[in-house]
Image 1 (spheres, one colour):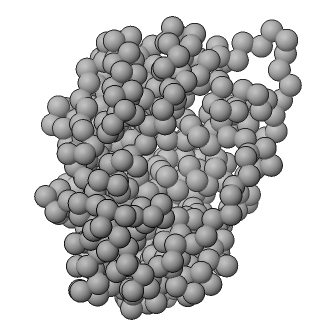
Image 2 (tube, helix red, strand yellow; image 1 turned 30 degrees about the vertical axis):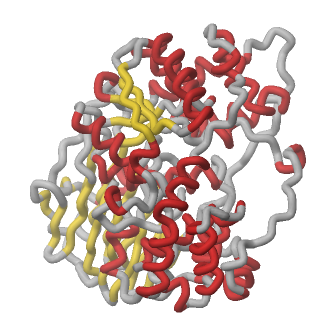
Length: 512
């Protein structure tokens, strides 16, 4: 939503709007330029506050302007009201006692922070913030989590000098020191007993409609990531019910029989709603393919299939799309409590993880904030995914990650959550056949990833070993074991765990 560079020694409240950002001396705050967002600012004799926030539907947006001068009492009231904004927002207040950056409980866009002497830097893309960090030392706990695929929503990032501002928290910067202030744990609800005549599917449809109505977007300029899964399909059907066939859909299509099934299922959905579809074959944008290697630096959390996904977003943007809706959050919304989930089989760590990495995993919950209003895995998915959309000039919409949707899911009896029963019943009621509601084949990108690893994995691994890597220098990865993976891939004899080396290569690329 914003990037910034603020000199901590600045005491003046004389900030001006300078076309695309606020400026005060050598300091600046730059909001993302998107019609989903608006800005607000005010100042009194000693303080100045800036807010970048997601627009509320039915309200005229604030036009960008220099901070409006007000008396202290009016300033306090306006600041209090701004801090309770019910959509995504970030607040920055500069006072004689320091700089405070805070965020609310809503919204996907992250703010990463770092300090360099007396200057506070922030950005929504951690890769663009690296150059401002005072050093590049790695955070062993976060690196271990990324390598073992046990990520958490956390203040920690791959670099010790960079911090994520987590939901409802604030950061205070003064005299070169950055301190985090955590919120109170959010209250969670328990399942409720349904009335005998409860119409659960009707309630689900009303919920999704209400959540969508709470967001500002233009239907004709909105696309839907319609993979064909239960979550994206239900979001798509609710958008279709609100807006008819004004929407564009798209997806990355998988390989083999699962890909053929995915095509049939999506075609049924597209026929039903009259969507205009833009689909790409995932195998045309293989991970690690030098032909499709992203030109810009990427953060450690970017998805492996970003080449194809970014191409899809670029096609949408060229077609006039400015919003992209997806089903992120649906898994957690209808999840069962841990005690009711199938037990996980004990899983040995890949052999290339060193004792240093395994030892760091003992502290992997360090930096995790108090319980959020929605699941931490959903929040992590939002923070990790947002930079890809913002780079493409799109604003993401995640109806199933809304707090109202999460609360509705918690209220449901377990029978409606298990195996996403609610989502499937809703599609059955709309008239979709069993292949749509209960696909016999599991649709995932394993075949695409295997193809990428066998074609490009050996050369990519050996290039990493030849040039060196912070992962090897930091003793997180065993170079000999990694070389053995390259040989197995070259001989077309990979083990099941060798697929995980794609995440090692992704992390290496982000760190060099």
